Image (cartoon, rainbow, N blue to C red; front, side, top):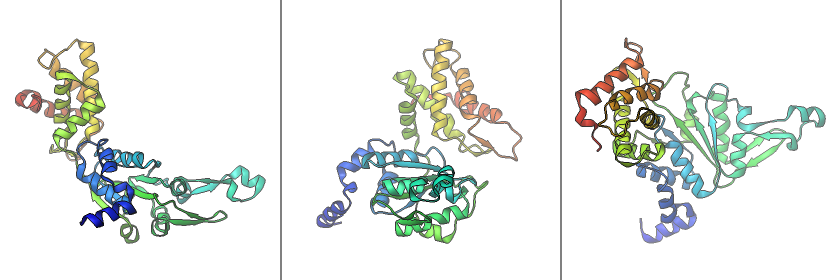
Length: 314
């Protein structure tokens, strides 16, 4: 890209400036490439689907961008109950009885609110929403406007975007997206962060500090990452499981008067925290004859007993 072309691009899309990009990046850990690509797509005026498992910083990336741009981030959960009326909006029934239909008694749904405020409409579990609901988005994405009966035509502000997320590892209750929907969305696949990035995330989110906190964070990330590769686990835990496990360990350590990772009871305490923080987040394969607790016990033994050297920080 020539300097002249780059300058013209920044002038057309001020959100692309290096200073703005650096400020956004400071809010995200270990997602430089994904952030750059997502930012480039939305700065170009495009809608995008972020495909990846839970807990991979998709929401964090979008929150950082919208915070920098000073626009709203509106969340919608994709499920069978998400009807077109819930997405677009509806007339207030009591006011309709008194006043008949009018633009004044129309209650905007998240789609219209995002269009009118120039925000990001973020639809999580996009492929769980009914097909007729997703088709409601087609005109909004293609024309940046939508016509609502008895209200009129709503035009979107320039920063309006439709952002979708999908979990590629969970197809239960999902529907196949139509070609028309696929054709209007860019796509970015997002995987788990590397181990170092996840440890830093746990340090920040769990608030653990010092040498003992570093060890707790490292152990929490190690056992959590092990759930993603275990043969009997269909889907492992995201980094959220590591964050919660670390926070629970810290509180147990206070109650049990454990001050270092070398103290008696540290390993047993960690297993107790894993049961609370991870057992509900892992999905054991239906063909396996084990409970989540049994699988976590095996992971715990591998980390703390069979390979104790791996528990060292770093």
